[in-house]
Structure formats: C-alpha cells, structure tokens
Length: 401
Ligand code: NAD
Ligand code: MG
Image (tube, rainbow, N blue to C red):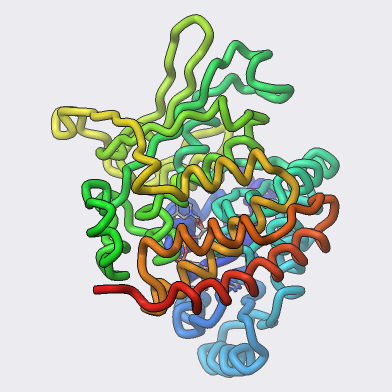
C-alpha cells in the first residue's frame, strides 16, 4: 500500500471500550491507518495517554477547562496536537476533509450530532453508536444516501448480518430472497432470575456480562434486553426491514453473532469469538480482511450452541422497543432518552433494576409522538423525554433490596 492510501481515521469516543479496541486494531496496521483525531468526554488522563502513543492532529474533550489541562500536558511532552472542546469540535473532526474514516463510538444520544456530521460529509462511517441511529433512523439513512457515505455497522450482530447478506442489498430484503434476520442475544447475566429477584439486582450484578467486556451503559442495556430492543430498531434502519422481519434469538454462548434466513431454507450465520476487534477490523478494511488480534474460534472448545426464545414478560424492554419502532416518528428517540435517564439512575442507585422498564413505558405513554422530520424535532423530543423520565425516576424511587 502506498503512503497516499493510508486512511486517516477519527475515533469519536476513543477512551471507551469500542474506542480502545479500535486503536488496538489500528496500531497493528500502521501502513494502512493513521489517527487524525481522538475524543473523550471527561477522561482527560486516558486521552493524554492515547495522544502520546497515537499522535493525533486533534484531541477533543467536553470542556475548555480540560482542554487547557491537556494542551499544557501535551506541550510538556513535546506532542504537537491541537486540543479543542465541545460538541461543535466533535462535529468538526468528524467532517474534516483530511479524514476518510470515522469511528462513531460515543455512547448514547450525545453521539448523534458528530455521527450525523460524518454521514453528511460522505465519510466511511463505522457505526458503533446505535443510539444515534435509533434516534434519527430515517434522517441518518437519508444523509448517508445523499452524501454517498459508506455506512458499515460495527455492532457485532449487525456486522454479522451485513456479512451474511448479498453484497448489494439495498431496496428491501424481499428483493434478495431474505425471509428473516435472526438477531442473536446472549440474554445477559440475569437471564435465569425470577421477576422478583430482578427487582433487587445491583449495578455490579447487571454489569457482569458473561461474554462481552463493555461500557456500563450498554452492559445494563444487555441485562434488561433494551440493548436487543435498540438493536432491533437499528436492524430495521440499516437493512430496510420491518420489525416483523427481525426475530430475536437468545444464544448464551455468543459465538453466532447473528444470521440471515433465506426463502430457499438456507440460514447463513457469522461466527467468531466475542471480541469487538473482529467487526472493527471488518469495518476498517472493508472489503479486504486484516488481522484483528482475535484468537481463532475453537469449535471443539465451544462444543455446543444453544438457542432459546426471549422472555418478554420478565424483560419487557424488548417489547417496548418493538412498539416504539412500530409507532414511528420520534417514539424511538423517546424510548432511547427515557432509557438513558433510567439506566443512569439505576447505576447511581436511585432506581431499581426492574423499574428501568417501568420508567421507559411511562414516558412512552405520556410523550406525544411527533414526526421525526428534522434533527431539531428529534433533539426536542429527546429533551422532553429526558425531563419526563427524570420525574418518573423520582416517582419510582430507590431500589428495594
Ligand atoms: P464506553 O462507555 O466504554 O465509552 C464511551 C466513550 O464515549 C468514551 O470515550 C467517553 O469519553 C465518550 N463519551 C461519553 N459520553 C460522552 C458525551 N456526552 N460526549 C462526548 N463523548 C462522550 O462505551 P462503549 O461500550 O465503548 O460503547 C460505545 C458505543 O458503542 C455505544 O453506543 C454502545 O452501544 C456501542 N457498542 C458497544 C459495544 C461494546 O462492546 N462495548 C458493542 C456494540 C455496540
Ligand atoms: Mg450488539
């Protein structure tokens, strides 16, 4: 590969779980990738350490006070990176003409504007930030189509489905003989608990995921099955599917990352060890394949693959997400916002585990559904839903233990 072919990458949310895995893959291929920008919210020490290793042109933090600190530290270390702060600075490094690839790995709705900036600027967008797509699905897909951006799903299930679909799958699944998308779910660490035991779950128990090591917000979402609900919505937008075309399958080993069923009876699966570096490497190198540092899958050690139906009575978040997708408009943004507030309150021990779903359901019932015709309408629905959820958190109150 010539120097001109080196891809310049912005990693949004570089200090998180997906962000650090992305830098791990990039560092294995210095002849292919270089880092243009790294961004973090408040983890300034972690961002400083990454800047010393990866030498970005730009580093972005949330506040100017943290940016002043980082500028001073980088100057002392003799590293010449520009340091900026705030949401507009995130959008700037996502749309910068020097950049061709943007990893969108900020957690939550905070990632929407920078991910959208990358999509509008026609970048290769590696999308881990599922909340951005859940909030703004139609607008996001329109922006990708209008700019000619390449959207590659990094969420492991969607990456698997992408790999199992025909190369050209635009225009609806039925045109390509696809009967169903089979979205696998580990079931999370609380899969076997009774409804009563779920009331008393602590943050550490909810975050102890059996197969994946992830940030705390997505770990709680995995435990409530809201993660699978968000992923169902994500799959509908990415693959032009209806909620009825997406079947969630609980698969505790997390070896089959998802499947596509075809009209002729074929079911194509993508398998591998549960390690995000596989989908990240796929997105970075597409359509080529590169080493991701992932151990080969040992089928003899796996030995057995189990599949079960999800239990929506104990885990209502999956049903709530499907209903929000069917309601359309701003309903998925409302679902996402209420969930973010409820998960935050749960992690802060201000809300019980089972009450997360109650808060989301209350807010979906109380908030009117508007058309998601503009980013402003979505951001407005998001803000209202957060306020409503904060009130419901107070109403439901601290956990019973
Ligand atoms: P994380 O909490 O480990 O990291 C989040 C990153 O975003 C950090 O760099 C943090 O500094 C930054 N950030 C947080 N809040 C921010 C804000 N308000 N403004 C700007 N930056 C902010 O999260 P993660 O587990 O890496 O997940 C990132 C995204 O990828 C999420 O949307 C998640 O659903 C998705 N995802 C994660 C995994 C996984 O294995 N971790 C798998 C699939 C999808
Ligand atoms: Mg996933």
